Picture 1 (tube, rainbow, N blue to C red):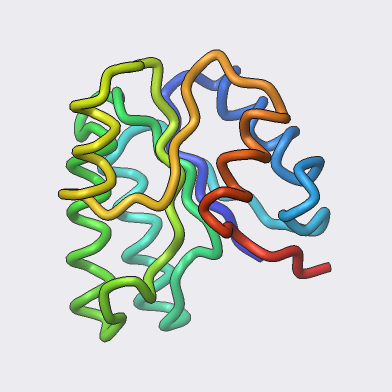
Picture 2 (cartoon, rainbow, N blue to C red; picture 1 turned 180 degrees about the horizontal axis):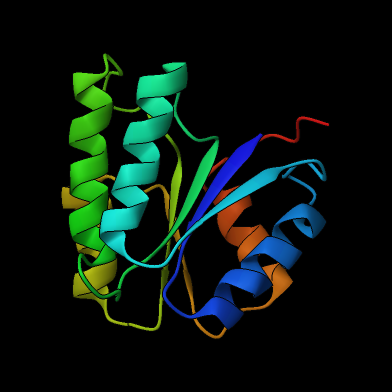
Length: 142
């Protein structure tokens, strides 16, 4: 299981990496790839698609990042997945991580950008687990 964490705050990325295996839905043997802005996230997705012809098993994507924000990155990721032959809905499941507790950002991420779930900072393991469960993300693969 490969998980991409795109988060410009290293502490939040560390927290996600620590909490995800404890959520009961993510394999304890998961491999984590880190990106610190949206452009790096897109490059990581494109590299995996090119090298292995597969998507990440899960992407945790911060909405507010430098260089390219999370919503822009997600739209570009969905385009890259489409070019690689993945149909809409068959790409990587994406959980948006945000400090923005406003409906416009959250609903826009779902309807226009194609995310599967979201979690609002600050979050607990329970919050993260609930987001993964509500979206059906991902099944444990130990």
